[in-house]
Length: 194
Image 1: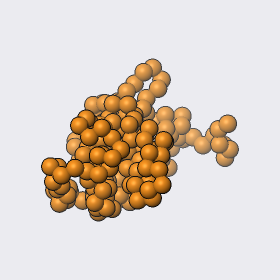
Image 2: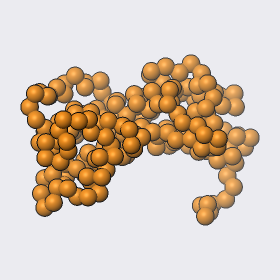
Image 3: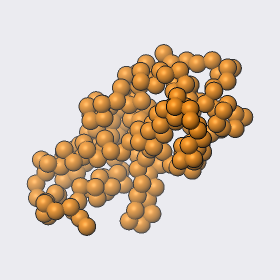
Image 4: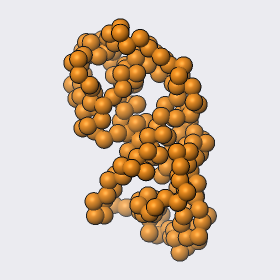
């Protein structure tokens, strides 16, 4: 059985003793515990709890939203991706960079559901103000991953989809599986699958 299959199987079990602070999966007599500390070590994202330090005046317009989106409506990830793909910023290098940052945050760090996810106004304010490098994206991504695992994992037959930075969870699970015996994890070959 492959590790990613084990991860999927683990996510569909009742994740024992899990809380808002950790994911605990019982596999082959061993309890694996994934915490925000594990997430921070693997992802290198800031995981501090200082989100309250990032307050913006929402009465003032955000220039990214004002220039490139319908300012009166919520902005979806799909709209962000469409605007990114269409390079709506033209020759404006400053806004090109800002769109790259937003795109990276919402497609890699917060890999949310693509069509219905609404992007927080705060995310645009963080990028517009250039304070996004100081923001604890790791804490936000970890909290969303925990929430997603508890409530929103979509399972349809043999397929499942994890959102909200599952790569950190996959790396952690891979590292944990190195210690399991051959009953649970067997290396088939050195060649990647074709």
